[in-house]
Image 1 (cartoon, rainbow, N blue to C red):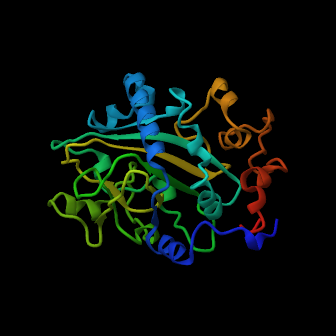
Image 2: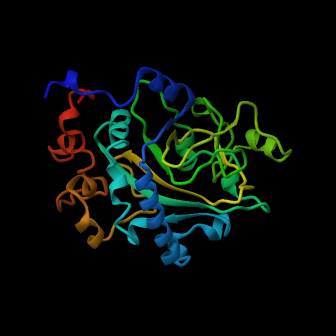
Amino acid sequence: MDENRVGLPLGSQQLERWHRDGFLILENVLSPQEIVDLLGEVGTVISQHNNVSSHNTSQFHGKKYYNIHNPFDYTEGLDYLLDHPKTFNVVTYLMGPYIRAMSCHLFVRHPCRDGSTNLQKFHTDSGPALQRILPTRENLPLQLKFQFFLTNVKEDNASNFIAIPGSHLRRVEEHNPYCLISEANQYLEKGQLPPGAVQLKLKAGDVLIHALTLWHAVAPNHSNQSRLSISIRYGQMWFRDYYFAAAPHIMARMTPRQRRLLGDFNGETRGDLVYRPPEDQVSLMLGEKARAFGW
């Protein structure tokens, strides 16, 4: 197919905002019916996971704000989000085809007026080392998060994602094993937001993309509604799993591309596969868009 006929998934203004701010909102990705269906699946996951310690971060973050790891263990209704047709083109356009899905989390943020967790403090993701590896326009991202919002967050203090635009390019000078950023959190201790910080407003069906070096926090939830969202973390394929290991029966129901994203190389297990992947890697991830995306 003529690559000139393949539209790019982000316009020039969107791409500029992404590079400038370190995050981007894709609006109306999920249809109303998808939202209804996914909320049903999420309800199943929440009711069935039964606070299994290996799948739930409530022991660290609290009973009101927690993450459920590996929701694929409980339902196949979330599988298609791995390569959703309205987001996966953006994933591969930004990151290239040599990627994997490192994790999937269900974020549960119940109304809560008491206490504070590390989630509500400014931090970066994926550990102290990646905190010091800053992105550039010329380089592929090492990791990105795509978060599918299933409930509206239209007002402040409704468990909003709080971001400091442009902070993904700022060096964090101090070392903290949890990647907390004291120069930003000192404002929270005074009941204020750091200069430039914004509480993002999203609708159910929107998707938030953000760089893992972005300075971000989660606002308290003073609303009367739980905030529910599903986050998928993508990384270059040589990264190891992040709270993630799909069982054989889960792999069996996935498509070939989804299985590859979860680390299946057609049964091959040699150690250099992530550095010398199968020849079908580009076509499996990109299909007819390969040349248009620069591959």
